[in-house]
Image 1 (tube, rainbow, N blue to C red):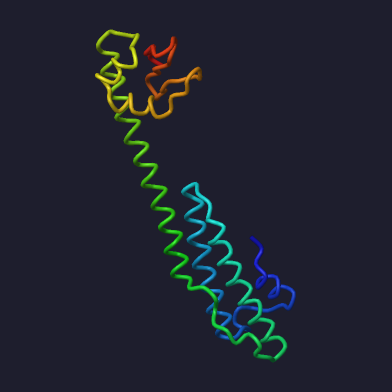
Image 2: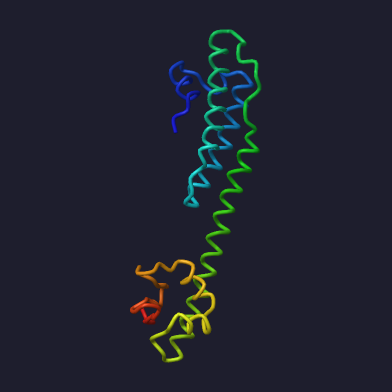
Length: 175
């Protein structure tokens, strides 16, 4: 993301130490938000459009502070429009929510794989929908919630696949 304040600093050959205190504080706040955004991106998620709008508003405010400094004016009398701590908290909440969801999905697939392993140990390879419900309730819940009449239905894990081969009949195999 190209920031307006950085462009203004480059065009006017300004260093951070050349700027007024308000602009420096605004840049520090922007950098705090950018660090949080980078951490979020490392977890495989992108910041929300709302977060990006807030970041742009902060950038615009710092840009106007720089223009005031260059022109010897004080037209930018407002305070910085967003609180960086609030934005960082939003980003961290988004990141932790994503981690919680990923952990829940991972725990669920480990549990399902355990159920499929138990079904495989029984020696039976063909299972009806009702038999799955009786022997592997969580696996059945996942199958039922994503079931499409006439579609390709089933579950695949790292070790097993349980695929519908006839209507409401599933075949269990090792992968």
